[in-house]
Image (tube, rainbow, N blue to C red):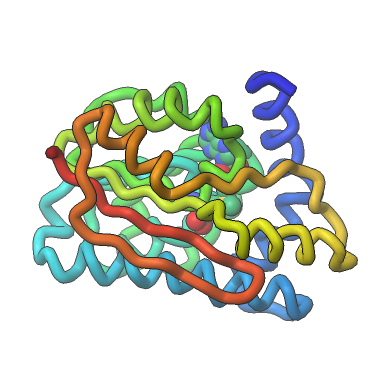
Length: 229
Ligand code: SAM
């Protein structure tokens, strides 16, 4: 499957069955056990990023790009924490529509974040911080380098990225997870060896400043904050 096909599949998935599934996972209504587990793990990732940015004390001064923003799970709490200038985008119009509704309902200053439907590759301009959470799972390893190169070039100071790390243990868990009944697992999920991602980042002039890992049995994500080497 080439990238164009992968992207078409991903866009169509997140505009249809994937939208229903992930809107529920990234919400607070009833979900099944596996989905609840993913919700808890994903929330850990969001909390780590919000805590890092709050701790830096300059949230209201920096420009942020939230690439592959989903339903706004990161951008909305960042605005609530004081961010004033976020451009958030996602390849799925449905995810972006939901993000706009949630921001309007939940935020006092929803205009602090602008949501737009577009591919990561269409992002333009420069930002203090570019953040891309749990999107690399949709990129095969041979496309990850190009994605990291293009996206991180829009970051002047900091790049924050999370991905599902590839280890024998997580590989095994992923296979077990695939046995569980449940609709809409229609997209391929790619795990990436951490050393490989760090090497790709280093090739683009980035070094790890902070890192964390979010773990719940059916969600695992390595979070890296990169600064200029
Ligand atoms: N970053 C969000 C979060 O953590 O809540 C959403 C994560 S979700 C697992 C992956 C998101 O990436 C989906 O909303 C999907 O539409 C988006 N996505 C996948 N490929 C993309 C691309 N090439 N450009 C923009 N968004 C993309």
